[in-house]
Length: 309
Image (cartoon, rainbow, N blue to C red):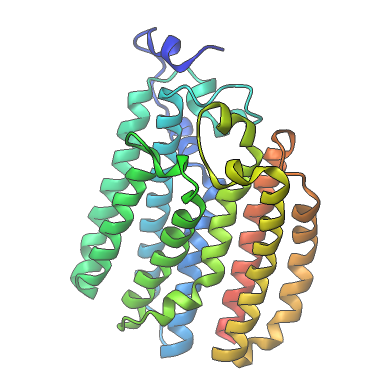
């Protein structure tokens, strides 16, 4: 083990293989991109009665590429700043630059590549749906870079959870709903409230487990400011808000979907209780991240099912 600076002084190293590139893309975090698209597609189908499946798959691919870009940028900047080490209670596959002798510049090129491909694919979407998705995508791209890069990255501030939730969980459904339904409405942003909370909680899970590490790195994330006890209380409140938001949205705008809510509660209850009892400490970080991603899948899929009834 060694610091980022000492490792980077060794010159040319192992090429970035496809396996390592996939690990940098972090597929286990892709629910943060998949669920918002799924919810947007379900809303569009529920409202219009029609869904362009080819366009839906294209939007899904674009969002996965953007999520992969975020993950790779984050790993790159954390590594070169010396924030990530082998002592951070992460799996080897979740910290590629720490555990593999790879040139970090390769990761930077990969992150940019993910973003460029996403925008290249987005050209077709813009040709079909107009410039509203482009404006939303540009906002998202700026935030993607600002999230991990720059002198004061967003990930170092107490707004990281809100920004990641709003961009991935809010702007993605807003843009996708416009593309798939042919109409723009901020009501789609309201319908995306559950995914905003769910994606934000993925980041909050990571940050609460990493409080000690982040304090040492002079990060001022929300959990760092609150400390663990208060952060967990807020975390629990947001989990309750997540489920309550789904129930209220379904009851008001998609009332036929109420029949799905009991199944939603039954399916998500074990995951919710597991997270409720998790201390969100460094030693339980790996388990907590698995639990919050699984909960995003469970609640997202059943929310979409309720929308479709």
